[in-house]
Length: 299
Length: 267
Ligand SMILES: Nc1ncnc2c1ncn2[C@@H]1O[C@H](COP(=O)(O)OP(=O)(O)OP(=O)(O)O)[C@@H](O)[C@H]1O
Ligand SMILES: [Mg+2]
Image (cartoon, rainbow over all chains, first blue to last red; front, top):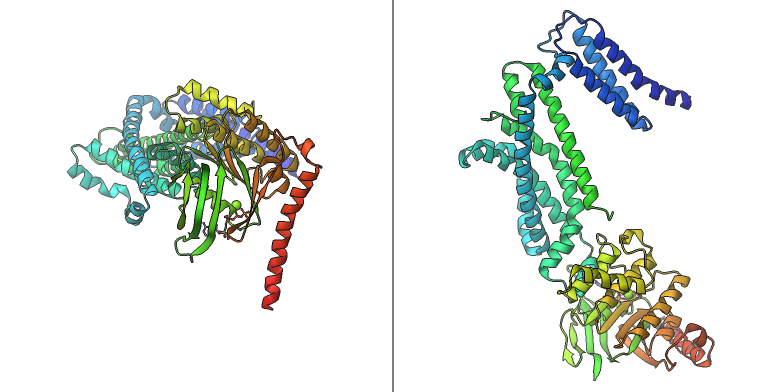
């Protein structure tokens, strides 16, 4: 029984893959300009699956993914009755990455640039202020309750006001992104500093470290895991805020891409944009995971 | 002149919200330069508290502490501490922990010199090959050795050690004691050492004088008149050794019977 299930978990994802490829080549009832981009993506996924086939979770993910793509492909292309505007065809969705490559790449870079600036500002301020506020008890007692009131406010709500106050839309966007990352970073830093073992502090005191050394060489490294934890949690939120912020007065960016084509009811491009956002967020998360592994070798 | 002198020291713990708790009452003792003294006594009698006052981590509520004849307030570079519980920084490798310590007393060396010195001291405590391990990758005994290396590398005149081998098994413990004996004889300038321990053998083997502490006070001082350099196999089994051991044991027992006697009186 267990053996059977195991064998099945190897067969299913590959079976769905084969069916999907067959389905792609079966005559479609709707117009398809270029089926090869989609095909390449599907093959790339299959190669990735075969590389990680030993992992049960990879096989399961493959099964779900290929089944989903198979149903999507089959249902949207094999019936004349399908309204391709409302229910976009996967071949066309993925073809957008080729036909609109310029806009997509520009969008990614414009979004990443704003995100990067927002991150940088938020991390410097969040960690710096977090260390100070976390260390000075009196400051903490004054500031932390206030932070708890302000931090849950969704930063996107500041956008219209930020646009009015700040010199440009882009500055306003960086501001709201920075807000989204600042609060979790700040709060996690304060909490980390507060949770440091008294023994470590005593140890530092008997080494006669200066205040600066204490902050930079003791409290900061001790807080790094907590800070990274906070950042990981807020990447999604920051992207959400950014894409939201791009829907206002923008001419580029992934959020703008989705919003712009929504206005034309071009849902094929809308779905492409959404997939792209998913990919970018995943890559960023992987990047943070990688940095975290490099920085925190001591746990 | 005495290297360290405690004069009528009282300490009350007064942690936020808690009741005041008197942990030391009228503690008096002094330590000569180059002397090794052990503080021994039952759990909770105030040994760690005494050491925290010597290190400057806590201020006495009453009384004074003198170092080199001058009143001492707060921590200082002339004192190095090895804590009862591992006190390495978990995000630094063994080598980094040691070189970080050196850096705090010796700010003007190059990075290479820090590393070289750190490696030397790690080697001295038998940790060659473990320089780049993080504390979580080291056993308790190894971590304690790194802590000792760090303190030695900083070259303080006074070393304060709180049960440095407390959480170490018998074999490792003996090795560490031997290592300490050897290292101390190597030093050109003899260090003044105050060590807290629960182990009578350890106290006799290592120290010049044993302070017996009980109920917030120093109750008894015992000279250890054994010649140096000492080696355990030469000492254990001698009459002097047996006498000393008996003397300290009796202190523990007489205190226990005293306490039982007290309670009997209440009933
Ligand atoms: N931070 C503190 N706040 C309040 N009371 C404390 C504190 N630290 C220690 N004490 C109390 O002071 C007394 C002496 O503690 P201390 O740690 O000096 O004992 P010790 O002799 O080192 O014991 P052990 O051998 O178990 O380490 C104990 O009764 C303890 O409960
Ligand atoms: Mg203790």
